[in-house]
Length: 117
Image (cartoon, rainbow, N blue to C red; front, side):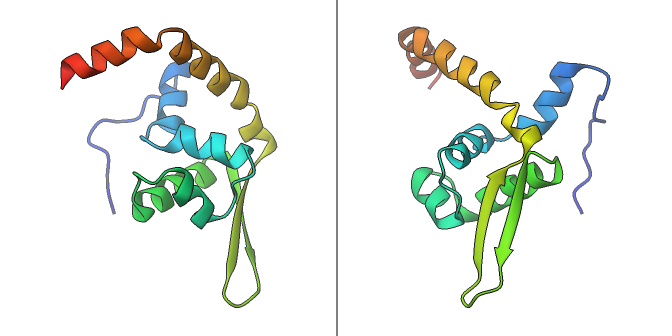
């Protein structure tokens, strides 16, 4: 099993939220689940650049942190759906503010990102 080289700091809110939301696709996963894309195949279509394996890992981490819940229906083939927990829904205003900030500074951010490449 993977063991982190740097210990997790649990005494600062920013460190805590980074621990929960760190991952390239987690914020998009949460936003899409909130938009009623709940099945793994739907999430894969919404985030086509992410591999299925990475999405599954990040979904599992979000589930372990109590941000989303997974429901497995007893049918053949198995049907799986994800939903935000009440706790997870409290992140939506934060994600919304970050998205609006990105929209407000879009050109500057795009320029900075293109310059780095």
